[in-house]
Length: 311
Image 1 (cartoon, rainbow, N blue to C red):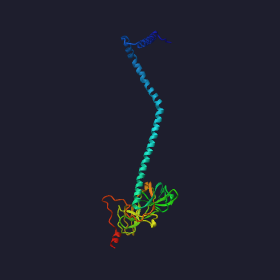
Image 2 (cartoon, one colour):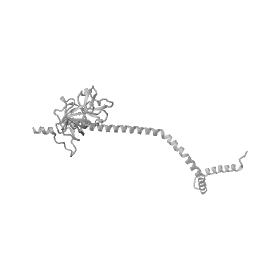
Image 3 (cartoon, rainbow, N blue to C red):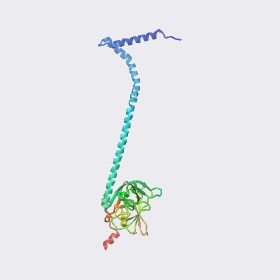
Image 4 (cartoon, helix red, strand yellow):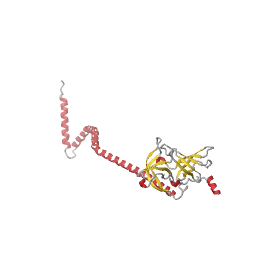
């Protein structure tokens, strides 16, 4: 077996002695040239080793500091995330309140123009697919003065009629339902007819069908339709916008004229609605309809109006 020779032992002894000497020199005060020279030599000899050790140890120290700060940082992150969720919810609620406020303003404007006394309500559920009736449930009922066969509107036009009412809720059949028919009158004329519902899906923009009693009644795209009104104003009060003609059906030889209409109310996104609990004192005629854009004047009076004027 090989044994260590005298050379390694001698080197070790010299290194230890040099280290002790440097410690003694470094601890002496003053700026002695010999001491300064020795310090510089030691720095040059041992500086790279010390720098390498520091560089190797830095990731360990950084990791330790990260781990030490992690509990507080995670708590802070969770706090900020929770605050962000609360602010997002508050913002969404504020935006929703703003939308509802605008819809309520539109509803009050319509009721004022028509002279309708209304009870505001919110549409809370919707039924319609699978062959069932197109209905919505409102969060108001008999305790609010709502009863069966009352007209329901929103800020743009007709929604439907109440078919059931309990103390706190009411069920409304949409006028686009296949079982619904509404007496109708053309804007600016005395031409009357009925709007029949066609929709049995959740698409509130599905067209209804307008049927005019006179086969030669003037009818074209863009014409607007309002409710004619029912006997004793139930289930429909007069003058409520029903919709706009989107396509006229050509039916030569038929006894009536038919067309498809787009509902005035957006039945696919109902929110704030009004139940008419008091009918107007007189027929508002076309006064509830919004103004047409410039350049889109109302159509001249129809045949019935001309006959009335000739008398």
